Amino acid sequence: MGHVEAPLEYVEHYYEADLKERDAPESKFYLSWLKCVKGKSILSIGCGPNLYDDCQFFSEMPRELIGVDINKANIDFLKKSTNQNLTSAREFLKKNKVKCKALVGDVTKPNDDYLGRFDSIYALGVFCAFKPDKLKEIFALLNSYLKPGGLLIDADWTECQLSAEEQQKKKEYLFYNGDQEIEGMGKLMKEANFSILKHQVYEVPDKAAYGWGKIYGYLAKK
Image (cartoon, rainbow, N blue to C red; front, top):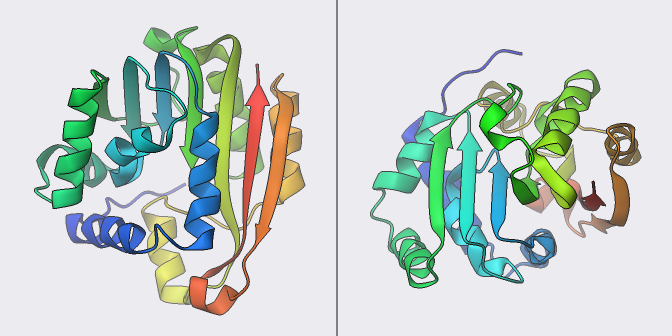
């Protein structure tokens, strides 16, 4: 799978667009899955520029939050942006004494430092960027990173309605790589020795305006 580094301007626009949609029902649905994140040590896979914001939606504050993303621009944005909302999110983490690291990394590659380390691992709009064969490998890795009884949380978008130009950008930047079969995602998790605790699908009312037809979520347990 080819990868082109996302420009910083693209990341900034992505973050700002997400902020504007926070009160929309679609955003409320996918953000609700963050309430499933629990434990002291948390890993965000493909964290994007929203890592510091995410903690505000957890049901409990972790002591450690690590975000990994292949796009260096996402990590640079998190560390250097003067966006007022992002600054507030950094202060929120500091106030709640959350040790947070944003790292450039390829989630498809094993990391021995992560073995048996995390209480929860979550991914927002990430797994849809990979084909089933690669997802099998990723889910196996994530299972090995979790403590016994650890949780895997996934929220993803499918039935893409975006323009061909925007789809191509998202594919190049590994933000998206084609619609995945929703039930197939759960099957792959089970094959990686996860048990599905919760699964929901949100049907978007105005697919053309939103750019996607469905948002789905999974909560799975090791």
